[in-house]
Amino acid sequence: MTTSFSLPLSRRSLLRAAAAAPVLSVPGILRAQSQTTLRFIPVIDLAFVDPVYSTAQVSRNHGFMVYDTLYGMNAALEVSPQMLSGHVVSSDELHWDLTLRDGLFWHDGERVLARDCVASIRRWAARDGFGGELISATDVLSAPDDRTIRFRLKRRFPLLPQALGKAAINAAFMMPERLASQDPFKPLTEAVGSGPFRFVADERVQGVRNVYARFERYQPRQDGAPDWTAGPKIVHYDRVVWTTMPDAGTAAATLQTGEQDWQETTPHDLLPVLKQADDVTTRILDPRGYTCMLRVNHLHPPFDNPAIRRALLGAIDQAAFMTAVAGTDPAYQFSPIGFFAPDTPMASDVGLDVFRGPRDLAKVQADLKAAGYNGEKVVLLIPGNSAAQKPLGEVAADMLRRAGMNVEPAVLDFATVLQRQLKKEPIGQGGWSAAVGNWQGIDWLNPAGNTNLRGEGKVAGWYESEKMGALRSQWLAASSLGEQQRICREIQALAFEEIPYFPIGQYKQPTAYRKDITGILNGTAVFWNVRPT
Image (cartoon, rainbow, N blue to C red; front, side, top):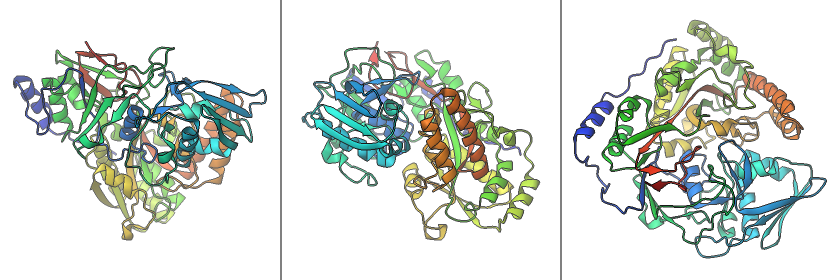
């Protein structure tokens, strides 16, 4: 199958015009701001300020500004104490005491206490797969005093620091007990953490702006070096203002004219122009890039039928999906991929031959009919305001139609897509059949962190599998990297049989920023260590 995708002609012309114009006028953006204000363009609007409830990357980035974590992760994916001064583990590894650092305060002025963290761990674990595994291995989680978080385990869980320190969605953000004790399946509307920035709620304009102020009482670690979410988090700006732009072309133009300082994700078709700009730097912060999926709803026809899911594999053209997002430059896209991020320890070639070679859509149509597809409507959710996910959705709609499926695209804003994917009702009652999505590679590192592989029916898609759960338990109990890798090969083989979702490729995502700022760390967008030159 050959799929074409035309990028808007207006982007490059807009940038060229911006280069010639002294100032680009964008409503709601003020050029003259404090020298200690960092002006940032997020990939999409912050729909939810609760990073435990939301699986959106923008909510995770917001989370790392406002909240802190017990452990931090560096760009090599190693974890180390962050809010903690350290931990003590018993000889049988069934008793862990984690000790909070001195001088930690919530943004409301109260001291950070161990009981706050216990409540936060429980709320996070109710939403996160890795956290759920930790809690299931825990007999008692308690706070025997104000600074000690105590795990008494039923069985060894050597990955406890990795679970509590992962930078992937959902990260284990700590919050006051009064917030952490609330229902994890309802989003919090108040954002109070102990992180290096305070969320300035009264300056928020939904869909336009979010504002963060330096938290003066934040105490950075005194040891180590800043490295992603690990080490000292030293803030050099008084304020960080996130401004959501109407489109990526406008965003890149404001960067070029100096109205904005940093664009989180820069579309690949704009890179040639930005690379020629004297005052702008482009760079890939995370080589693991973004892994993409076509998620399907396992509860309702047609994708409740595993034979139909397997038949559709023959239509998946990962290169077409990635070209739509990242262009043809092989430096920015990779396929085929499986169910773990490429070039990470758990990735393998198991099952990938199904994606190699030309697509035989006539055969796919016949296979779908033989599997029982009877023309059922497929409602495909497409985030229309996402520069990456919108083209993924367009390719998916074209692919499904060519495969002979009755497709109805539903182009919605990103927040509405997130909400609708939580619906279990059939499409006649506002449900859905399929949806495109992109995750950072760090979200697909292993079977504990990749929530889409859990097989417990708790995430959008509602995939359930006892076999997958058993393999995940084996992986958690594995005593060596080689054993973990062997189990992950089995997990990938099972995933190609049961199809929890369709992996549709990996792309590398550049960021762009003004050359008069420095100190941007590798990984995801974090705002400590960043400073004006």
